[in-house]
Image (cartoon, rainbow, N blue to C red; front, side):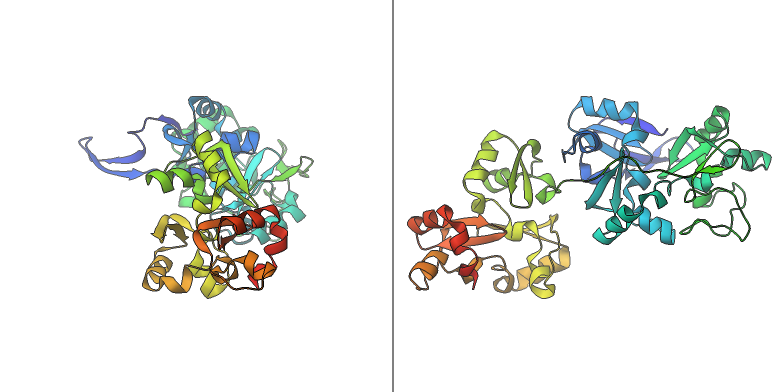
Length: 407
């Protein structure tokens, strides 16, 4: 099952020389950006995990907020691990390529977490989920061990399933499963293994060579006699809630203390379509009382992409930059460099009404620059006001000023 409970110091894959000495330690990739799969699947909550509570399963490191979630996962990792290790099933079915799914394009299909490369692929999946439900079943559900060792094509039993590199393998018996687990690379045909010849076509439509009636993961579920049963999708498909902004880091502790601290779901703050996780009740209250002081520019989207391409691209906490008291997140290092070279071009991308006070503009038809210390955040934009009185008037009736003040 490739399951390892990890201590904080054992978060890498070691390579040894012939004397048993460690020659290299490669970090194990973190699954789902460090979010807890147990909280996400069972409670629909984007709860950040921590390295101290980690489990390595199928080549990925899963992080959990407490030992409880870790132990739940360890008891049944295949029930919680995302389909195809989080890769897009639509892309895999149609091209055979493993393309990483985006966390913001995820859903719960029955009891399985599924992530897609883009929103179009998610919609395509929902149109006909039966077509993709078993796209991760290796070799049409046939036992790769029996074929490799005995040269026979035998349908595997779903109850014997084992996961390797995101694919589910079915076996003719528990003994065959045990043999596979001892040396999966020997039987893994997707990674150069010598498990025997594959049909010429095992992708997209699910058809093999003309006239080949063997079951495939796209045509149904294998049964003991080699026939297939139509797949059914009776369970509700649930689109996951909004992915927390700033990868779940608390904007308040960052602003006040200059420290990157992952927030907790129970202290979340919803600002329009954005969800921020804060570190505790004090940080939550601070964000609620003055969002403009803590929310990153453009709600965490990349201002350079927004100005140059008119696209909303999520910024990365790994490409952050502070400018004039505001936090900016960029899509990549190149866009961060572009901002630093000409901040005046991008810094006001989300400032409403060109920085003018929307209240005096509407009520008095007078253009007056707003003050940075008298600002609020509303529907993805930063509004600045001539004074505290104008700010209170805006907060009392934002619908009066928000639209017109931008013109």
